[in-house]
Length: 140
Image (cartoon, rainbow, N blue to C red; front, side, top):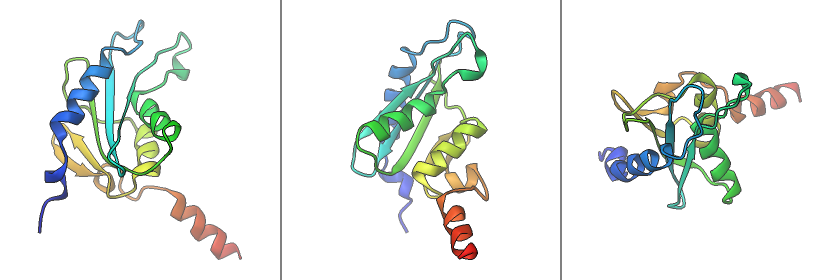
């Protein structure tokens, strides 16, 4: 059986994530983050973090990826990479794991500091649209 991650151009995703991290707006933390994802139609979508003086309303790079995905016509994420300002792979925060799960599902491949993981490994027992569908069906 072929490893699905072997068909992904991880170098290109990381390169695009590094490139967009240089455009991050991080005047408070100085922690630049860039993210890139492959969409099921072959597009690559990107995002960078955008800080705000009201820290709680800062946008993570993953938010930018999802916004780029939806604004570009939607689709499903197939592979995802996120890097810090040094170009090192980093893990999405909990909120962003949920966003990625929603738009890539359990099978989304994620570039982590420990290698390629599925979103199911990154967010075990993730909550998504299927849980809402199940509840609606159960309630009749």
